[in-house]
Image 1 (cartoon, one colour):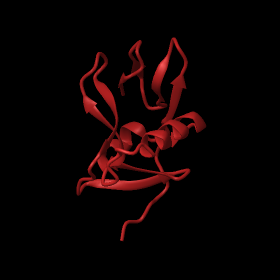
Image 2: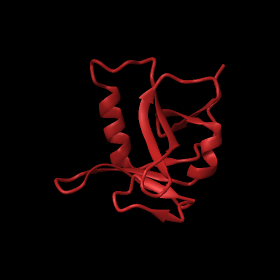
Image 3: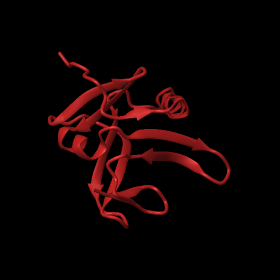
Image 4: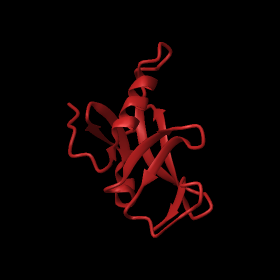
Length: 114
């Protein structure tokens, strides 16, 4: 049995709406879960990961306001307390990340350093 524990990251109302819209698409693969994480790269050292993927053995399961998501346990150190938002405007469109652990972020907001 999977146990959901307190989510290390949060989502704004607009991010929740966009994620639910994506999950409600007719071609959405229900075997996949939203992955929140990091990977090496980007202009400041680490890049955020936000995608739908098949869960792996070392993933922790979380839920925030009805949104189930997975995260590699080792990524929690870098992302704890982060808020994910969705910007739907003409000039700024996409998910944004407000990470209190980032010592430096790039101009586009998709990579950071700790």
